[in-house]
Image 1: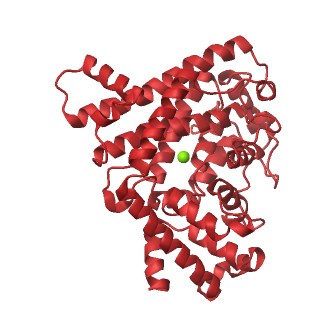
Image 2: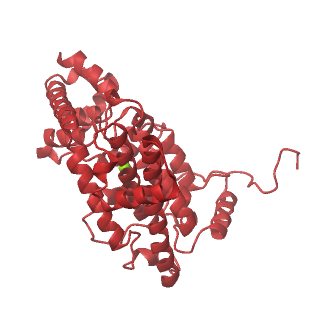
Length: 384
Ligand code: MG
């Protein structure tokens, strides 16, 4: 063995490498976690990597995709013109991944799978957030509509081009199935999603409840005093004032947001860890076929609903945002109509896909892939 070789690292691209990942996961993960060795694999079989497990590779494939990078130019709730403090779709995604990984580590779940699912969960978002999604959905309502959760799958399976042999990122079955479950969360037919999938969903709302509060107060759309009509904020303010005296407004807001994350994460962990211990599931499949769910206690779930109703009424439907929403929707619909009438405007590399999915679907997909800024530039170029 030469000096730079490490005896602990697997050598070569063969089944030995998967067994290295397998052994590592057997040590670190709980029996009910999704273990890489039980993966159903990929549509296009590929050799295992010598030191990256299958879900780690999925996470890396998503991280290096164009759609993921474009999240930096897509709004979460507030547009780029409103400042540079608030979250973009990318920083939201990173916060979801971090919070989900923190909880997953304590519960003994598969952190690589959690990160892959979290980084993927919003890659199908169009420009202008949910306003953009609603507009595109209306444009193509008679042909199945548009959903960002569905579009994330289309991106991963058909649109991203990384390999000569086939389209898409060739992700594992488990990551694709996890994203598929997001399309219709009311559909309870069939087995439940993996615990890792359920966790990322819980982490998503944990994250946006906290950061939308932070951003809305920072942008002065609401004050913390107004928000103290909500129990979760009232409790967070109380804990902040018990801990510190004479905090300025900025540090008070930051402390409240910290308390919001801490309260939700700690509560979720203690609620789920105890029950997982009692249930003693022997495998991921056993957990999926039980009635156990990774979720908040009824009390905290009710308090989250109260906070979300407040944010909906006072922030997401704030007059400043309604105006942004309406003008963005108008522009997207105008762009859709223009592309449908003049499909020659699609860049040449999209012509083949246009023939496959039809001009109207192509117009929706092309617009959905744009960042907010590119969408603005394109609107000026083709519609004005
Ligand atoms: Mg999200």
